[in-house]
Image 1 (tube, helix red, strand yellow):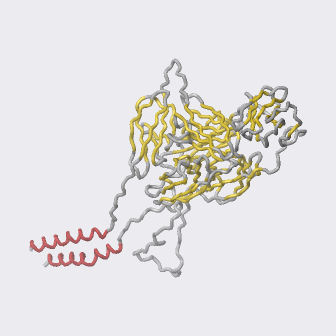
Image 2 (cartoon, helix red, strand yellow):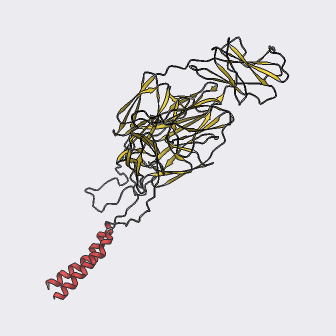
Length: 589
């Protein structure tokens, strides 16, 4: 009789109690949403129903206690500022921050900020903007040339080139440019490939030209120890006529130095200055050339890389303080799919060069990100785009041909990964197998400087015409080895997709693309990691005094189906156990 009662109780539990419990405790899995970071609406109900009775009845059923979670992180945002033409001076809230383009400038969130972009010969551009906490903003200003002529230094002379009475014998279809300069011994030459030059003596010299030849649009005066002077030529001389041109040379300023102090939260991140020297934060970069902008990149494993521009004044210290943003757990990051027409544009995300178009940029934290695109011969493009968790944001841009008032330079180097300077300002590192594009340049002479550890500096001055593109293909010469063999070399690393964490002998060194110097010669193990992709591990050999290229195409991990957990799956198992127990009891009986 007792066994019959036990069997009845077991059947009762299996028939009524377990289904009710399962129905009340069903659990389903949903994609994780990082509140306070993503911009997506949550699909979860605002308040899950409770099966437990309340301890006391509420008299106001419509009121609900809401707990507000404040997003963790600094209440700041960032701005990228560009201009056409580039190289213009920028002030942010009245403080000088360098020359365009500048990126990653930290500003207070929720307040208005003023920007002024100025360049000699152009009307200043002024605007204001505001940015939300943790968000990116972009300012792109097009400067308008000043219509009125600019007075020359000598007030007794006309501001524009004016004909004078012929002082040379009549030369048929010949004319002359007479160049006046304040420094004797300076060399004067004509632009547009026109033949002829002269040396300044007693304050001037003359250059003969064919009046029916190719029109001359510019002239240049140079002398060692002085800044190069370039200006426009408004007209050609008529037959037998002399046109006067005026130039004032200024001594090259003695370089002054300052420093950049970098702190990060958390500390221990890798801080890189102008793509070369690096230290762990907190740190101070000393003997930094003043009067120009410098690029600081900070990265740490498990955090979003950060890039900013710091302007250093002579004898002063520039401060860079960074709160790094943790990488959301995969797959709660997002990506940008950048495509341009034409392709081959340099892609910068949040101020950091990442790849050339077309390219997918994965591993981005949800929120807004600035995108800057450069391609020689085309106007630069700057905008912000919102990245959503688990989604890919398409960025499709048709680039506009550059204005006839600006020009471009495309630069390649052997070896790749060389630090590139334009007129003394650091611009970035040359990519492997392609060009680094410098756009929106003022017509005239510009100096390209390339530097790479264990190689001699490469310098070339080129003339950029309005609407034109100049190509510089540089081959750097290795430094002549001394009596002591060089025992260190370099690694130039790149990955597809970009932004992979790079480890050298299991030590984190930064994110791709990057150049590492002073690597001991010999074999090394390099590892590239990107969430959602299979790790790439290689063994490379570094040779002293040489640059070793390391490239990897990462393989995307195939998505796997994850079973949904629910107590309901336990019910059939429990039921089976109960039935087996019942059969055993009946047999024993």
